[in-house]
Length: 315
Image (cartoon, rainbow, N blue to C red; front, side, top):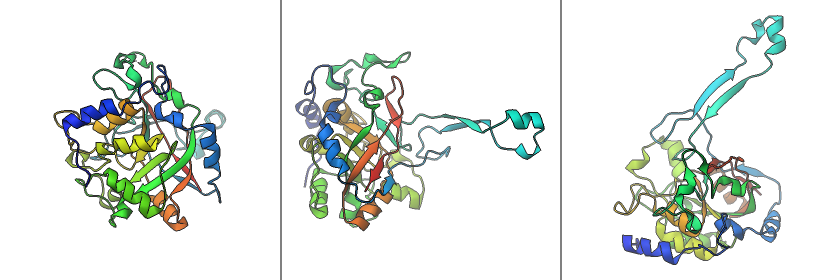
C-alpha cells in the first residue's frame, strides 16, 4: 500500500516534481500547455450523441456549516406588483435584476483555482513572487485571464467510490496513487497527456443524502502522494468533488493545503474544487465509458485568482 509521505518527503517533492521553466521563464499556463490544438480536435471525436452533463454544484444563498462565505443576493428590481403598476411604471419598469456577490474559494462553490491562488515560501508557480498579488491591484500575474479562451479537451472520470463499492469514502480515507491505478484498470481507461481528470469520492453525494457537515471535522481528498502520478500522466487539470485537500491536514507542522501547493505552485496544475460528479458518474455507467469531451469557460475576470465555473461533459 502506498504510504503517506512525511513532512520532509513532501518538501522534497516540491522541488523534485517542479515544472518551473518547463514551458519557458514567463509561462503562466502551466500544465494547460498540454492541451494542444491536436488534443482538442481529438477530444471532439468523443461526441457521439450530443448529450451534455453539468459538473457544477448550484450556487445558492444557503448558509450552512460547509459554506465558507455565504453568497449575497440583492434584488435591484423584481417582478412583484407588476399587475398593479400604473401606465408610467408599466412603460419604464421592464425587467427584474439582481446583484450577486460571492467569495467562490472555499468548500461549497464549484470553481477553478488560478495559479495565483497559492504560493509557497513567497513564490508562485514558475518562481514569480507572491507580491504580484496585491490588495489594490489583485493578481497582476498568473490570473484566471490566462485561460479566458476556455478549455476544451478530453475529460476522464475515475470513480474511486464505485471502485471501493461504497456510496462515498470515509472522511479519513484518502485517495492514494494505488486507487487511481486500480480505477484505471477497473474502468478500462488510461489517463493521458492533456486530460482533465475528475476524481469522484462520493463526497457531494454524502452531502445531498445526509446534509452539510463542517469540513474541518474531516473530509477526504486526493492525498499529496498522488502528485507524482499527476505529473507522470501529464494531466492538464484536476477536478474532484472535494475541496482538494484532506481535512484535518496530514501536515499540521507544514501546511494545511499540501495538495493545493503541490499542484498550483510546483506543477502548475490547475484545480477545480467542489465539483458535482453524481450525474456524470451515472451517465458514464449507463454508457459504459469513462471519457468525454470536457468544456469549461471561466468568467473573463480581470486580475482574479480563479472563477466560478460550470464544467460541461459532452457525450
